[in-house]
Amino acid sequence: MNDFENREDENKKEMTSGTDEGGKVKEASETDPEKEKSAEDNGKSAEKDGRKTDDKESKYEDVCFICRRPESKAGKMYHLPNNICVCEDCMHRTMDTVSQFDYQGLLNNPQVMNMLNNMHKDGKYPNISFVNLSDLQGSGGIPNKQKIKRKAKEKEKEKEPVFNIKNIPAPHKIKASLDEYVIGQEKAKKIISVAVYNHYKRVATNTMDDIEIEKSNILMIGPTGSGKTYLVKTLARLLDVPLAIADATSLTEAGYIGDDIESVVSKLLAAADNDVERAEKGIIFIDEIDKIAKKKNTTSRDVSGESVQQGMLKLLEGSEVEVPVGANSKNAMVPLATVNTKNILFICGGAFPDLEDVIKQRLTKQSSMGFGSELKDKYDKDPDILSRVTVEDLRAFGMIPEFLGRLPIVCTLQGLTKEMLIRILKEPKNAILKQYHKLLALDEVDLEFDDGALEAIADKAMKKDTGARALRAIIEDFMLDIMYEIPKDDNIGRVTITKDYIEGTGGPMIEIRGAGYALPEHAASTGV
Image (cartoon, rainbow, N blue to C red; front, side, top):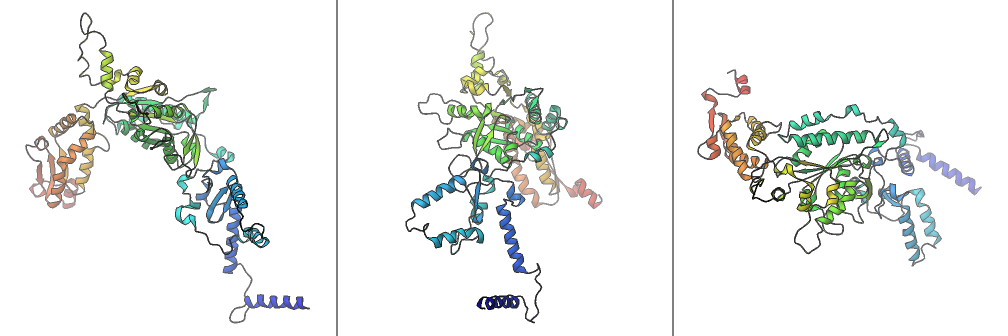
């Protein structure tokens, strides 16, 4: 009877909890907010147990919070509260450590063990509060930039359209796009266009008639300001494959202060949004490659020279490399990803100062006396002497033969002449004169340069001997006063930069709107 009475009391409580203030019984429907909340929680827990997360989270692999290994290497992951994942190895080690130092006999306490066994059902730790690490550093304390994207399943790969060779931009189209931004350097643009075109074909077809097509890495040599880096930056706008630009000056041998050699691949991985499969088909440009040449007349260990060249051999040749994800160096707190560099195209560029002297010394080795002799200063004024470079000259500069053997294509860029500097001022899409013309057009002022002014700017740039970079420095200097004074007077309609103003013997020509001049837009609006 007591059991029956207890059951009736419980039924009455349930009925009263289901009644409103008027005494009416509420319908046991799905609109109850508490039931909806519990159902949502159960659905979330079921999704976590089934490892179904949001689209944004499902893109990336789980990373162990302790050893920082991704799911593809560590295997099965245990999901803890606050989106923390621990791999099976670390979980076993942690439990072994806890069992060894069980000072108070907690594991042998049946009450504690029952509480731990019920944690999975409740989804919470009773009487214990945790700091939400996901609020501090991202999901599970590890940001997405340090996570690797999940590999697509085989069924999804079959659904993806195969890359069509007909859609690959032809070399002449790539060169035409480069011509819009880069002036001169015709041979260099042809070499890069053909290399990129062949790289696209290698990516599209792994084999062609059972003949494996190997990649051809490129070494670009040219004086400072000739457009080496600008060529690759312009190329990055045109390509669909990921492209990363790295700097060789910060690279050091493994174990020393500086960036590890594998960091150049980690930048490509970041450019591919941590997608390993896309990164393995990308292009890497390593700038300032001449800074890792062998140091001469030194007795200390060359950690940033020859050692870096030796460490880069495996990258250039093609091998599986352990790459830090979201960092420039390997450490215990950064997850590692395995990237195969077999299909990554490497383009190395550098100014190679004093290489001209090495070439001249080789060309003038023969005697300067007798029949067929050559003068010592025959090649002193040769502007295109870098085109005569050979592998022996690069070895004498400080590059090891193993490194040069993995860069079969040597591309030289010409030094900029006065005519090329004048074309750079006005012809490219984003020419510096067009930029200032746009700035003054916002103030309804027309800016013009006469031919004498352009020649004077080119002459000053040639004296600085820093290539196209000198043009902006010169124009910034004499445009400062004009950009400062023009907004003061709204009557100024046109400013013409003359040769005398560039040489400092005169001033610019200024035309006033009231004197009969007006901008086309202004004239149309005023009816003049």
